Structures are given as C-alpha cells and as structure tokens.
Length: 319
Image (cartoon, rainbow, N blue to C red; front, side, top):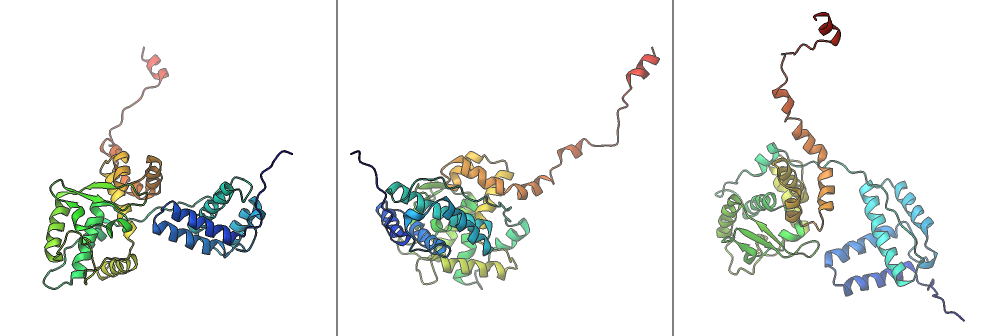
C-alpha cells in the first residue's frame, strides 16, 4: 500500500503557537520580535477560538477573522498587522504539515501621509536649553533629538548605542542593534559631533562600555521611559506632535527634498531592499508634494508677453 502523508489535525491553535514560539527562539530571533508575536497571538485569539483544531482552519477562517476584526472598527493598519501575524503563524503550521496549504492575501492597507515635524516645530525642539537652569534629562533629550535628526536610527537602536560605538576620528557611529540584525555604520555631521562631545563632558562616564544615552541615574533607557520623556519635552516647548519614529520620517523627507539618493537613503535607514524604501517614500508623497508646490519652475517663464500665432489662412491671404 502506498504511504500518504497524514496531517495531524488534533493539535489546537494554542498548542501549535507554543511550538511556533519555540521555533522562533531556536532561530534566535530578537526578543522584541518574539514579544511582537506573543502580542499578535493575544490579538488574534480575541477573534478565533484558541482551542480550535489547526486542521479545521481554512480560507474561510481567515476571511471570517478579517470580518470580525472590522466589526470592532480597528484601523486598517491594525487589521493589516493582525492578519499578517495570523498569516505568519498559519504558514508555519503549513510547513509543519499541521494544515493543508492555501494562499492567504493580506487586506489592503490605507496608506496615510506621515505628518513630519515642520521647520517651525524643529526650530523649537532644537533650541539648546540653558545649561545653568535645565536638568540633565532635558539636556539629554535635546541631544537625543539632534542625534535622531542626524542619523534617523530607530528607538531600539539608539537606546543600545554605547559610548565606544562613537568614532569621532572617522566621523561615524556604529549601530550594532538593528531590526534586521545587519550592523550599520552611520556618518556623523560636524554639528552632531560637536553636540555629542559637549554632551559627553556632562555625561561624566567612567567607561566607554556605558550606554551613550542613559537615565539621570546612569541606567539604561527603556522604551517606555524615553517615549514619555520626549513627549514631555515636546509639549514643554509647545509642540503637540510627538513620536520618536516621526524624526526618522522627517529625516527621510528632508533628505529627499535636498536631492538625496533613494539608494543612499536605503543604506542609512537600514532597509533590506530598495523596495521598502520606495514604499516608505510613497507614504511621504503628500508631504513632499506640499514642499514641491512652492517650487514652481514655470512661474519664472510665465509672463504677459504673448506670441501671436498666424493661421494658415491668414498666411495665404498675405501671399
């Protein structure tokens, strides 16, 4: 008798996800990535029964999942993220032979223009605080904002930078913790080098193994605390717009408007492919369009001087 592959349909979604997490850990995925999938699992199981057998899942299950999500009025971005995480888990089940293969299409994502910081807002945020009256935290946050606008690094990257990662001689900073685990070498401009050197004198470090940006008690920054600190910094300066990642988008916008190459931008942002950078820029199109509207090359040549065009009949009558 010819042997056939028999799918194990008795494994529950919950049990299968535990295997998926073990697989992620075995592949040495970043802790933040594993945490993301754990949060994604919690979101997904709000809409599907975690006790359902994996073998019972099919295309209809995914469609119903999307419909149920929409009933709760989640944003298109949230719906996209939930479905993408669900898809990733299901594809693992397919590879393991727990589930018959079928194609899963992600819902369309409404891409909204990213509101970057305006020049007026940047002027407020980049005004150097008075060292005689400000706290270390305010001065540190000012330095961080200058650093973010000069390097466009992600939150997880800049909180992991150590003092030894700064190379003033070669005017670069080494980014060893990145989203895709590919280290980056980011050039430092003359202004940020001067700012960082001034900051390090006040930072009063004892070892270059210490983190570049720290708390007032010389502890490593955690995401929640620095996010809250920068929100307060912005609002104290009358800027209601917040968000660390917004500085990254502002850098990208400024870079392109100044004529920077998308290929170079890809390297700076640490994107694995130019396609990701192009998608990134597509979202910025509306914002860039507002800037381009101020650059009307045709207005230079548009005046009231007209050239009279003679018709062929007029030309023939003059002959």
